[in-house]
Length: 61
Image (cartoon, rainbow, N blue to C red; front, side):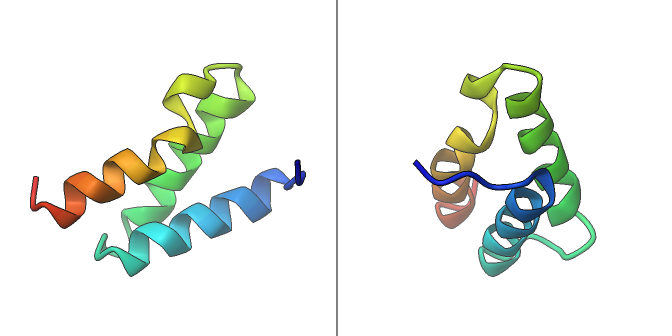
């Protein structure tokens, strides 16, 4: 399994959300919160949720 730094993971997550249409001022906030969830041990509420959230965005919810 690859290892990423906090900064790398926040950047990747930000890029994904921006590519999905999230405003560039909001995407880093989402990324920071998701990564923080992972770092505090709440993996079920971390970056694991990206596909689910992207699906909701794509469906217009």
